[in-house]
Structures are given as C-alpha cells and as structure tokens.
Image (tube, rainbow, N blue to C red; front, top):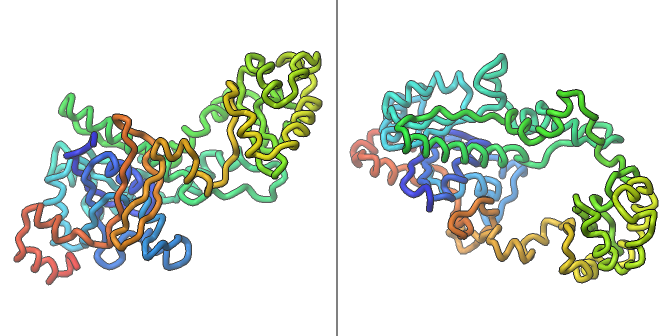
Length: 403
C-alpha cells in the first residue's frame, strides 16, 4: 500500500480527525490510537445510548471511523503515561489530534512539546473553527461548524420549512477527514522531498465553506441569490436537468448540461421521436421559453413506465441520467460491486460487517479495510515494540498509567 511504513500516532476522539486516521490506515499506514484507560474514545459510548447501531456486538459507526487501527490505553494525565507517549512519539511520522488548544497545552502535546521528542514529526490538528481568531479554542461538532456556521444549512433549507434541516450523522466529519488525510499525504511528500516537517491544520468550518464555494463566492460578489431548494422546477432553463417520477413512484434524474446534443436521441429513447422537431421544444432556447409545457410533458412520459422499464429503455443512451437509489440498493449496484466500493470486514467473531471503502484507489485496487480495535487491545504489544520491557509495563499498570 502507498503509505506502508508510515507510523501515525492519534490522540483524538469522535469522527473528524479519527476518520483521517482511518483513511491513512486503509492506505497502509500503521495508526496507533491513544485512548484513556477508563473512558476510551467517547465515541465508543454512543452505541449504549442507542445513537449507534450494534451489529453482532460491533459498533457500526465506530468500526467505520477506526478501521485498521491499533488501540493503546494510556492515561496522559499521569507523568508515567506522558513519558510513554514520548516513547511512542519518537517512533512516529505523524501526530494527529483534535483536542482543544487548552487541553493540548495541559497535556503537553503542543507542536513544540511533541517535536522535542521527534523534531521531524508532522503535527496535525483538526479544529472546529480554525487555529486562530476569537473562537479558535472553541469546540463544536460538524452540525455546528460545518453545516450551520458555513451557511450550508441555510443554503439547503426547503423554502416552506419551519426550521432548517439537521445534517445526517457525521455528514461533514467524513468529508473533512478525507481532506485532512490528503493533506497529511502531501506533508509526507514535502518532508521526503525537502526534509521540512509541516504543521497541518484543517477545520470543519473551512471544509464547509469549501463545499459550498460556488454559491458562497457568488453571494460575496453580489451575484444572484441561489435558487431555494424545491423552487423553480417549472421555470427552469433546462428541463433535461431535473428529476422525474416513474410509474412505481421512483425517480430518474436527468443530467444533460448540453441538451441540444442529445435531444433527438433522447426523444427516441423515451418513445417520443416526433417531439424532436416540435418547435416548442426544438432547442434549449425554445425549451426555456416553454419550460412549464416541456416539464409537464416529460412528467407524463416518465410516469408511464416503472424504474426497471426505464433502465432498459435508457440503456445505451448517450446523455446523462441516473436512478435516485435507495441505500439498500447500493450493495447490488453493478458499479458498486465492480469497483469494490463496499467491503465485507471480518469482525473476528464469525461475522462480517459491510464498510464503504475509501473513495480513492491506487493501482486499480479497491480498498481493503479491516476491523476497528477493541478498547486498549494493543496496549502491551505496542509498548513492547516501542522498547519497553515487561517489568516496565508492570510498573505502568501499578501506577494506573495503563490498565
């Protein structure tokens, strides 16, 4: 794997930064996750409160975020625990954290602190709002920093909603984690090329702004207000860039930015070849002028057949379209299967768990995720690899630095 031999030390919880560690692990890095001996990563506890799904004893969300890692239970608030962290830092290439700035200072894991043990270490921190400014030390989850503060929530609010919608679980975290993993890879390349280690910063707010930058920049330049979600269907400039409902109450999404190129072929594919020469719809300008008539006609046409029938009718059509799929259909989607976008992960207890593989592949090979660790599962083995003796490990247990 491309990151084989890279060692990552993760002192982080929940999703954003740990997801970056999960991506690095799937790309071949050895990722050691530091967890408190008693509480562990608080994200583990959400399954007991019913917020996470349990599958044959495995927390599904925790598995996704911590795939392929090794867990070391270590109390960093004790002198012995902090000394062990220094030993682990010495053998690492990357240090990952999302702890608040004040907590990092208290635990002595600021950049200067960890680089005292490893000057060439790449130091990575993920924050809610960025490392500078009045809110630099404030924590937040993605629903606040990525979704609400970035403006995304308002942008995607239905016009008739009493309240703006909440995001899906970890909606921004997984995207921000992927971006952070890419940045870490870049920092590794820079260090290999120049010898210079980086301090890498990413925030949920920044990734949210990046996500909606087309609308954001237009707004800042006084451009047109973005169309509200759910409005403008019958005033569209291009009826071939809309969803249409089928006879079995499913949805086909048309995606033709250059519709005139495909208009005649499209009319033939939907069984209406004569419409290709209808003066009301003959070109993009005509369809724009007669948008309501065109959209209403297409609504009637698509309502004549089921989704399965439309799949057959549109098979081989050169223009862009896609079925609006249910989540349970992705496991058998031929594209998902052919490209290995889902993998069955062995949980080690006779059961497997489907996980989405990292959406970047190397050398035409799909990702091969492995299960997340049990709390503190690798404490002794990692410490032995770091050079500690069994006698030193026994002393650490006696002082409660490790369980």
